[in-house]
Image (cartoon, rainbow over the protein chains, first blue to last red):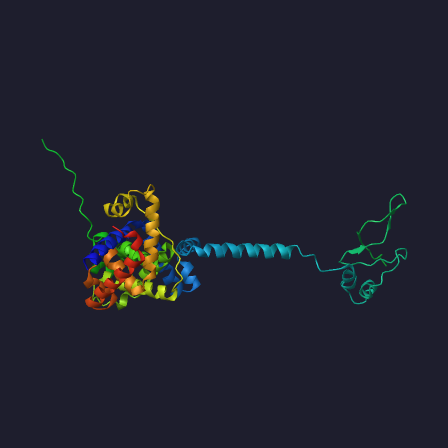
Amino acid sequence: MSETNNNFSELKRLLKLKQHEVPPPGYFNRFSGDVISRIRAGESGGTQTILEQYGSGSVLTHLLQIFHAKPGIIGGFATSLCLLLLIGVVLADRPDGTSVADETIVAPTVPGDSSSMIAQTGLLPPSDSGITISSNSPIHSLQAMPGMFGSQQNPLFQTVGFMQPAQ
Amino acid sequence: MLTMSEPATVPDPNSPANMLEADLVRHARRGDLKAYDELVRRYQERIYATIYHMTANHEDTNDLAQESFIKAYTALKSFKGGSSFYTWLYRIAVNKTINFLKQRRNKHHLSLNDMDFNAEHDPDLVALISDKTPHRDVNLSELQKKLNEALLKLSEPHRMVVVLHDVQGVSHEEIAEVLGCNIGTVRSRLFYARQQLQGYLAEYLKS
């Protein structure tokens, strides 16, 4: 029994080591503020609508309070922003969906207008017929075009406009 | 010769720092967060210490301590004043910690705090460390790790009485009130827990 008591004395001395364990410096200076911030965030999030929540104070102040209370939200918020940016870049880089055939077919029509009817059928008059067709949509032609000095120019594509002669 | 003495600073009785616990609780129940902030400041170190000695993990302790205070605030209306606010708060923290540890049974992850400067100069600790060992600071870290590992081997109720009594100096009567048991139960748990710890730490307790 005396040996047990003696060992318990040593055990108690060893347990005193636990009293020397301390949290990081400044921890307790911030602790109460963190608790109060979380209480405030919980109070406002549970009972108010979004307008009521942000109407009386700046949105930035509320955001900072929530971030301060729950630092993990910052990571999620930043990740969401990056994802939105990435989606925007991917969507912006997508090519336009229209084609040359579509441009020809969808030219605006006017009743009785032969040029519009031709435009609807997709058939274009030969260039030397004297007939020109007006169109709101530029037509991109892949045919080789005569150059200024008689040489054939073959650009990848060029804009071709047609004007209807006065009758 | 007349001398003008500086007017003595009179403490503001309405300042939360100078208010009695009962007054702070009354204000906090009405939604006065400044009053509750003062209550947190008064008890944060003791609540933190109890939870930390039970979990041996600073991050878990931080979460549990914050949640204990938040729960106490939301439950203030149910605090009837039968015990002191501190005892009531302590009970919330203890129950929350024990429930947390039961859910994570046998899945302990040590995240130990550093020891303060005075640890190396504590005569009780110095007496435990052999003077033949050249690196006393290493031995202190080893002792800290072994001690925390040994405590984690105890069941939660046994660990709690050792932490409250032998580490934090809480009386048997107050422990009984916090844990909701009688003093005899506290004493028997304490004896059994000390015997267990003695076995786990026999290597470090040789005189």
